Image 1 (cartoon, helix red, strand yellow):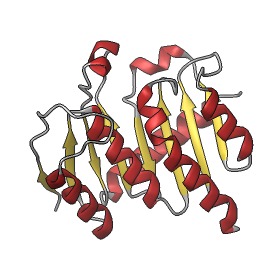
Image 2: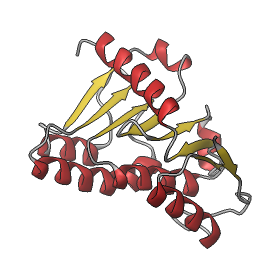
Image 3: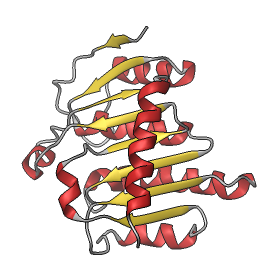
Amino acid sequence: MEKEKSTNNNQSCQALDVDPEYRKIVEDAARKGENIRIYNSTLAHAVFLSQTIISKAADDIKILTGELDKPSYDEIKNKIEEAAEKFASSGKSSVIKVIIWKKEAPSNEEFESLRSRYENVIKVRYANQESAEKIHHFLVSDSKRYRIEDPHTDEDLRNQNVKGVANFGDFETAKILDSIFDEEWSNITN
């Protein structure tokens, strides 16, 4: 049975200024693969959850997002790079797949450079903008851990008000997210 954990996310925090109590909850859940919901309402907590999910990945990472040129992606780029290096040297067919709901190439040159260095590991497809209204952005790894982001505005980002929920052991929801991602991926031809 799934449990829920809630923490006080009302404090204003910068990039990774994550309070010790929240950090401990996330790290314990990640280490144990616990099936508990961990909510976030700040950009720092969203970034920390995403970094933790990416760093725990052993086989695959799937990211469905609107764009990669926001500061939050700059904060997780290093974890994506570490995962890409780990996947590239593993000898397995592990991949990082990213769906971006924009037709044009992202303006994040660092991510594009990273993608070109790991072209056999990092795969990116661009979907049409119309789809973006239908599905929340999410990150899923190894069909067992995920973070789903609530819709937000650019003003929410400026105020570091980003809400979502993560879980490190909810296989059922993770598999549903995998299926949603795979269906979107197969419908994109670029």
